[in-house]
Length: 349
Image (cartoon, rainbow, N blue to C red; front, side, top):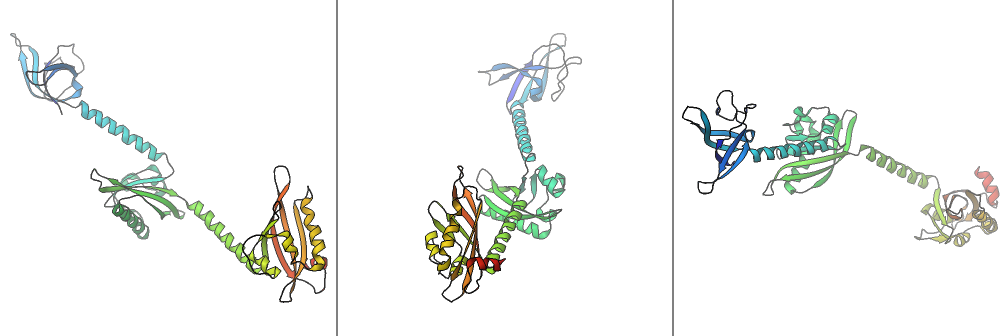
């Protein structure tokens, strides 16, 4: 605070602004003060509003010959800088609170001891608690123990590592546990020592459920493909490259070799009596209105087993309507010895 000494500037009476001891006669009030700063050799004077002064110390009235107070002397303490800093801090705090309260993420700050010192509105809404039932409490006083233990373990790690860490955490909700991605980082003092931590947690339960469902479907598909004699294939019509799953290699009685194959190479595995029909059926891809193709053939494996392979595929076309790719599945059924591919199709149905 800056110390001032000064005198009253005569002015019209106005609304009283009491500062410390009473310094005006009844019916008069100080509105401004002429303050003198500096020492006696370099004194400066300026007019200062009374409400910017905290207290007039050691006031002394100066009276005229008739006993009327004509000026006051004393020591003044200015609070203008402090008030400005307090207002700026208050605006900053309100700005941060407004930001935190208008996000779907859960935001919170905890002391190094684990006690909450800040939570946003989303935190209150999700866990059904008011801020005064959270601030000053620890996770163990708010959540079931196994949840609180996990939260505290992660918090301690952040403080010990003194760095930002991302966790996947589980928190209790009314409808059951929810999964969160939590970004936690330390708040440091001027010496760089953590005194608290801030956390921003986002509910990813729906995304995790979708991932788990997709993973389950993929597992079911793999199981189905391995247990029901179904393979997958695709055919790049521009390069004639074909790719298929290992099940198709097994159908054809060939070793599983990584990389692409060709349609011409596939014909080498087709039963000689079916090659012409197979080649003709493959030309279905050239028909401009066709959306799917189906062709089948017999194959005689080295173990003597004859299978009938049925290929079905969906044509993918470019913007000009030209077929460029085929995606589909292959299934194999035991073929009748000596039967044609068409006869085996009847048996398959």
